[in-house]
Length: 222
Length: 187
Image (tube, rainbow over all chains, first blue to last red; front, top):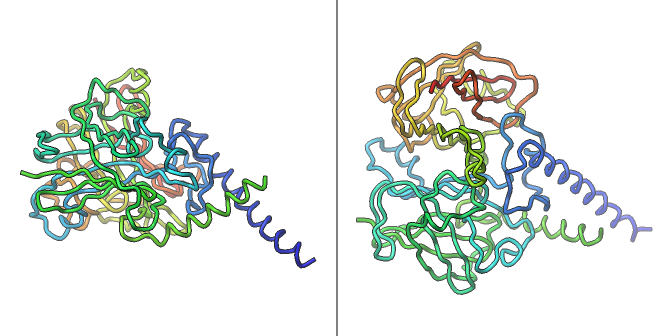
């Protein structure tokens, strides 16, 4: 009898989780069917406990948006010093999560363009001219996408701003940059896709990391 | 069925593991979001279904109510509020518009609000890329305009913003707890 009791407990626990998941799925798909997270909202995520209620005005996304500045945490630096020089770069992106899936080939596929995020196209704004791989990139706003391969990622700078990330328009490409990719960054596996800038001797690296994979796009400042 | 349960179990472990990550930035408690006018413009754009030009977008963080009293509590009456969480709320106009009778040039601005029981004062300010309202500088205001408070029919857990069309113009609708306000933007 003792043997049966424990599985029953686990079963009840899992069933309750499962019903939570169903509610959440409904909440994210009903009011706005176009909000997607890499096409799948099927797996449950137990850490999104507050998105179970439908928001009649604007649904809370499964893959939340975030922004990263260089200098890192620029708005906070500005709060401490209002006379600070303008920032150099800012990325606005959505953060899909693995939810038990493998990054390759469950979520991403080699050779297929990826919006470097979820939902809206990932946006990058340069507040001044910079150089990437000896090419000058002018001040302004662009979108980014990525073509991942096993041995390299191609990061594409494109001018089709304010678009949804599922359809790329290569005719609006500005530049493409090939960068190496690390298959094991050595840290704990990252559940959420992450973009962050890190200072270098000549500017900053834009770090893109998810799961165990990490790639860096070096940006040189003038 | 068994497969689903074992998958759920694995996911639980993954989520627990995710909590312990610290080297790279974790997830914000109040996630960022974006709303466009026309609504869902990015989707319409890639489907070639946009019938109106891009007018505005708002980028804001979405704090949750979490059982707290928001207006008159967490958000104190009469004080300047960042209209969100974390970074100050940003509004961008892709073309010239009018707010409170004043011409607003195309560009990026910060939007604050002073909340009162019956009305809100929206503040459009030109200091961008800033955190909260801690260093709010009224010298950088572009316009202040008052709007009445309306009640919502249902409770709103996460702060929400969306644009609505009204008589050929647009409204920026802000809703949280059990109230909503609408900022008129004239084209």
